[in-house]
Length: 244
Picture 1 (cartoon, rainbow, N blue to C red):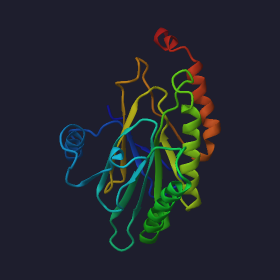
Picture 2 (cartoon, rainbow, N blue to C red; picture 1 turned 60 degrees about the vertical axis):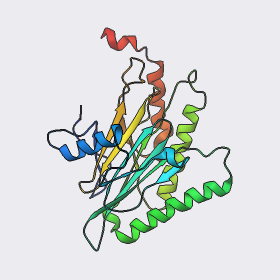
Picture 3 (cartoon, one colour; picture 1 turned 120 degrees about the horizontal axis):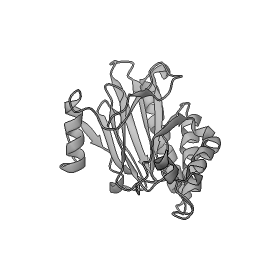
């Protein structure tokens, strides 16, 4: 069920609105139908860029334009949506990146290629849009207990710091929304470019009987402090919630 949309970045005059859950079928029938077609029937849907990470791992970046963006199956992968208002046309434009970080075991030339691609996209949107209209939100990732995946927590923290730092160095002020999954669940995202709204959907299928909630937005440079709260969630006995 969709929750009340929230502002991802309160410091921005043109912030991305985040809806935690699927679009409302009655008020947003077109997006609902597109989302159904993308996930259940045809991956090629008019009016939407399907940013399919599996087609070109370990990262894929959509075009920068006014079309909606969709990407599914963010497990450990993280991503970013960057948007702005075109100075010449007045239209909203955006791009979405879906990537598997950190790039361990890969050549430095590949890492440089990714960083160059991100910089090119940020430079393009910065040239086309006034800086006051540009916003960026980061999503995705898992932060699993040590007994499930030893490197999960370290990898997630490194990934957020790396991508967040890259965006900050290019002049953006990204905010991480939704937080990581503490179970082996997945996130799917749909970005409505025209209305500057991000739908963040968390699949409950793999949550092992314990709901994996969305967590408050935070700045990527604060992840060391924020992650302490996730550690406390691991230490909490899940049965205590059922007894209260």
